[in-house]
Image (tube, rainbow, N blue to C red; front, side, top):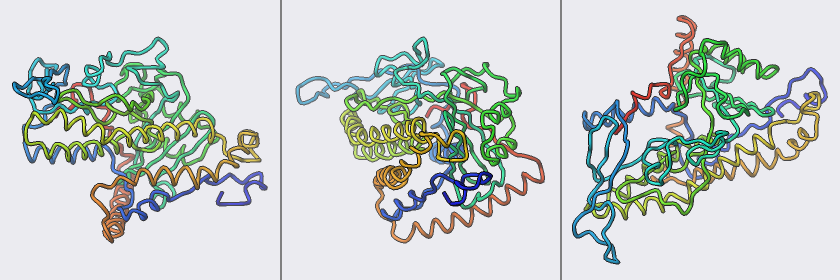
Length: 430
């Protein structure tokens, strides 16, 4: 705690349970750039622009993959004399009836992947009666509401990521650039407890975005930090989305590839969001897959190269899946009641247990997690460049954010719809 007087002064509110710069320390150890956050829509727009500059016709919208078929290649056999599945490429059928052929099919189509479903014989989005399992994924026990706003909170430029934890719920804020603050409210609710339209593939008609949604979320944080209520007050109901959180246990012995088809990201290894690694691991997948495919000289080599890609990634992604679930379970079961002797909840055995475990969290779990995450840096050390990049980014970030705050104050609160709120018909197929 920053203020040691809070245990003895009844009116003194507790300060932060743990403050850390472990990510910076890990980056320094490996001489890497400091961690920065980029909003997914921004990254997706950058990548789409780059693709369209190289080939204007490469991106097709308004359709998605319904099935695929590996093609044989005459004369392509393995060491045992059997035909190599997919050596002749892959044929893909789209939802609009069109058929495309390619050397490789990469299923980067998310946790409810159609490519994965065919590869493993699963039924897309099929749930058990109680919805605790869905297409082989486990319900985490939590649903999350998410929103984004432009608001100058206290210490905006000093603290980029905050987590407020309480019994069976926690609230996260993250600076995503341009003065924008992204927030997530996690609640221990049964699956299907919808209160908002879902932009992540759930039903879109089970909640009314104008029906006091923000007030509902505020009521579940009654007595919590004023900053949470300030952030929520500056977010309109229409900007809030919701999804139930599912993940999948590591599957060490299950290949991600079949012939010339493979999967990556959430299609292969969905994980809890507590370490912010879902998108990061997908990017790592893409990098490794690109490096592997760069050495291919003949399409007959593709199936073996895709198996090599899977073997190169499975141990790391499985470890990150496990660490992400550990982080989630710790929040749910061990750190949901910070010690506070003047609080009826904090002055219990759970609160005192949390105080005892705190050093283990701060000096063992966090360092080990981030050291492992930063240990993958295929481009190598960058010398003094990380410090220069950090200084340039911090200066530009502050300038852009202050301009956004001024604009929001002048024109009224500004929010931008999430990329994930787009209709199914707007999905991109590359």
